[in-house]
Image 1 (cartoon, rainbow, N blue to C red):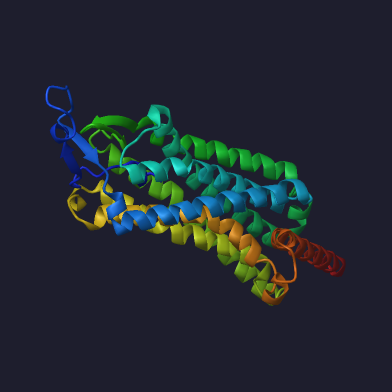
Image 2: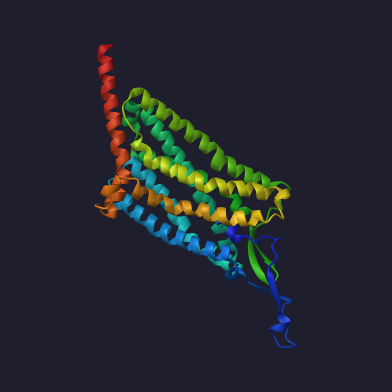
Length: 349
């Protein structure tokens, strides 16, 4: 995570004089950094949690990629979920490069990886939220204009939208590369954000990320789902919101995981919060919570697909297929029923 690569300048790290470790007369540094993570309960706990997130996220998303990419028929819905799984899989693959330096309290992977890890974190965040926005708009259009959607909603167009979402996510993630630097401090290298080009660059970037990666997408998604609920209830074409439960769970998980992180990043940008003990602790905890979103998605695919009793009777592969295919089948039935109703209405006119 972004903060796991940083080291708070306000934290008092333990250092040992090298004069005690080397014989007299040898040229040695003045101080030698002594990691304290193994003696801190919070650091050890977060390292274990992030290790679990890596294992679950890497394996879970790999399974979703295999099922949706190679075992299922290619549809608009599988295109959406495959793209989300790829985003989370790549992020989880890079996560160990954040866990190790957080435990060692030293960056050992070089300048390129310092920039690359931060870039991958924000690429995952922005690509996920942009894809969720596209899916929400797609659901809304399918409900509002069922006949048009049935004719125009194709896998090729969905793939084009996915590529555009990734390109936009790539563009807005570039600042994480520009401001990420490796600096040498007190006998060890650290990977930090160096906001030195402009007086307010830190605040500008934090606010921009909050607006583009949270506020604006949240407003669009809420509007889309409000329209969907009103339309479905007014037409009385469904007695529940079951077709949208997987998507709703994915969106809820994303915002629950990422909102606390954005709050603390905005607090960090305000100089008045520096020196408070809650800031470094909050950044560490919320960074791990944000990372958890990458393994929650495949879990939701499995446990939101079928009724509880049938989950234990089907294989894991069947669960995932049913979870991702259920929305497509229900949406198709809704589109077909809407088309027939429109046709009957036109004959009366």
